[in-house]
Length: 434
Image 1 (cartoon, one colour):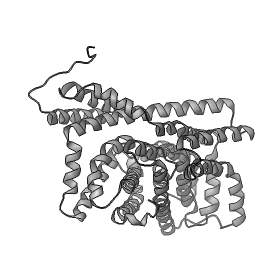
Image 2 (spheres, one colour):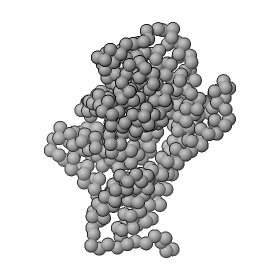
Image 3 (cartoon, one colour):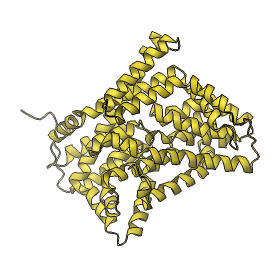
Image 4 (spheres, one colour):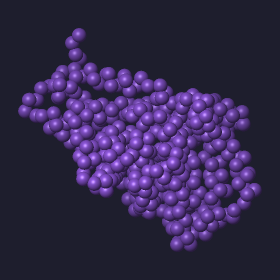
């Protein structure tokens, strides 16, 4: 059977030179605003076309093998849980609960914003969606309570960063499937880092609020906590189904998310918070988002396949691992992760960078599970680090404040999160659940 594709032979160019030219073209397309899926697809197809020894058949084989994975079936229902929560306005109940639990701390509303962001992004699994939801609900209140508009927007963006770390996390599912790491183990290992990230950001907002004399407008009240706990019971029970079923071995991740989806639909229809038309629209949104994530995953894997064919990933990883000392390896590892985290979106960053740096990570004593959590922590920080910083873009659009002003206001959060991240690299044993 004749191939549908034409292989172009360029004998005057080496495979490495072809890969380099395609990378330059991809960077130009990315800067020009071309969709990242099309950018990676252009690189992959161009590589298969221009490199004689690289067969087109490997593209179809890699795509089939990646999609033929049972754990990937968990992604649509996990996304559905997040979209349904947006339609049922569970975010309002979470904000009330967050105010009751942390509103008495200095800078009560800022603390509430961080706590709400942590809870909501963990449930929805979408950092940008969490930033948008919280921004629309809280930004004006933060400004009215004395916060500068820029710091208020930065706080909202920072609060939505931990969705890739605290379970349930779609990125952890993708990481586990792609690199053969247990998804439930990743969920468990992400708990301590995620909680510490939230408390680190609460520390920042409390210090800034104290120095700026932002008064706490709430007082600690057990009664209020109990009342808010009752109002958020549906949300908490959804989390219990999602995580409890997985950790107790009752459900697989896909089964757990499916059961949680059905619970949210039925319970909210019964109490009148969800209509049939809302349910259908939420499912359509979940399908659309799934249709964005999975093709991007495949295209990034195809690029990684080409880079592996060239040997670039192994060469760079081994070069960093053989840098001469553990401290130098950690420094180089940190620099590369810092650059990739601030310039690439989550899925391409995970597919391209994680395997490239794995030899260096293993050389300093990190196992695949610990490396996965540390890598995803860095990816989370990238959500508020220019030039990519998708949460900063979302917060900018919601608040109508210039992107770079929010980025500058977010510097304290970036500094404390990177400090925490370095601690986990130097002392991975502190994550006793990993």
